[in-house]
Amino acid sequence: MNSKAGNLYIVATPIGNLADISYRAVETLKSVDKILVEDSRHARTLLDHYQVRTPLKSYHEHNEVQMIPKVLAALSEGQSFALISDAGTPLVSDPGFKLVREAQLVGYQPLVVPGPCAAIAALSVSGLPTDRFVFEGFLPAKTAAREAHLESLQDEIRTLVFYEGKHRIAACLQSIAKVLGAQRRAVVARELTKKFETVLNGLLSDLVSLIETQPDNSKGEFVILVEGQQQKASSADLERLLGLLMRELSVKKASQLAANISGAGKNECYELALKIQQDAEEVAS
Image 1 (cartoon, one colour):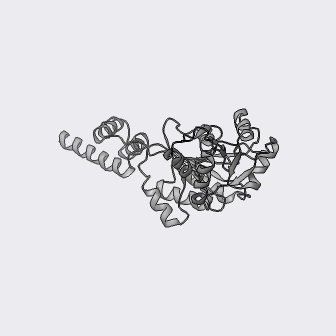
Image 2 (tube, one colour):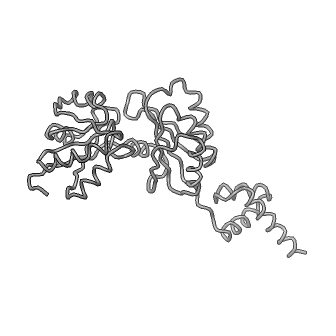
Image 3 (cartoon, one colour):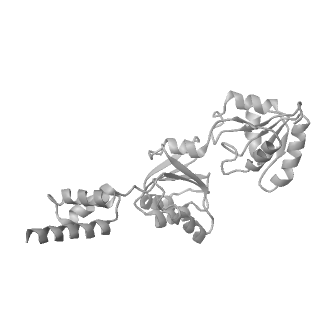
């Protein structure tokens, strides 16, 4: 690699509130030779606010393949670039990973200027478990493909994080409720860090109704967070739990409570409770 080679910076920018940018990010954007942007009109709002006069170069999913060799060639000649997305951390459901990969293959190690990310921002205020989570980005647009993918996530125990646009938010929530279960806890976050920031919490069934009746879903993108599947108790643990509950409760009430505690299915608990009752009656007789 040329000793005079430039640097490639991956720079996170605000997801809404222009004040949410680091000093280092602004300095980096001012110091590089060019800024790679998805949409120059969108980027200009932020850059003008901080008086960044660096030339812009369009870089998006439709010209990515053509742009990569040009960027690499310019890097080898000593030019430096900053890659930004329309909002948040680049490469998270945005173009850019191919550029990073190709840069690494020819000897460059891109430098990161970290900052805002909608998925992490939503997760932090969701009230759902944050110790383990899985980011799924945008689900397929077509219903059949979307629900097929959701079926592969039915047993996922980590918190699920999705992105969705304004036009499909209702349909997307309907699919999630249908496949993962309407009684799962979930959160829908919109316009984070902006004036009309909204974070809705509740069961999926409730959130579907809320979104369908919202007067204005025409702005912004959404982050959807869904609690993971509750880990089911083993058969032995479930039988022991039911045995204890049935000392004080009827078969029906004991099985309902056991299902709520263990995460096992109501029918499974009821059938096992009947078997325990039958075995006890046989022993007594």
